[in-house]
View: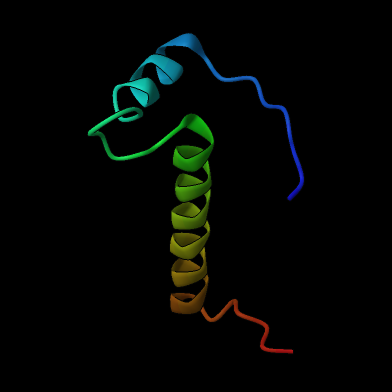
Length: 57
């Protein structure tokens, strides 16, 4: 698995941290960010499909 580095505003990181940890939605920050990226890409695919911008090749 590749590693990347990103800059995140402090207020966004604080919001993210409210969802990370024991008895919360995500085990760690990486898990939360991966889930967010997957969901965002799925949503973008749906938007592209609605606008006939999907290339099936």
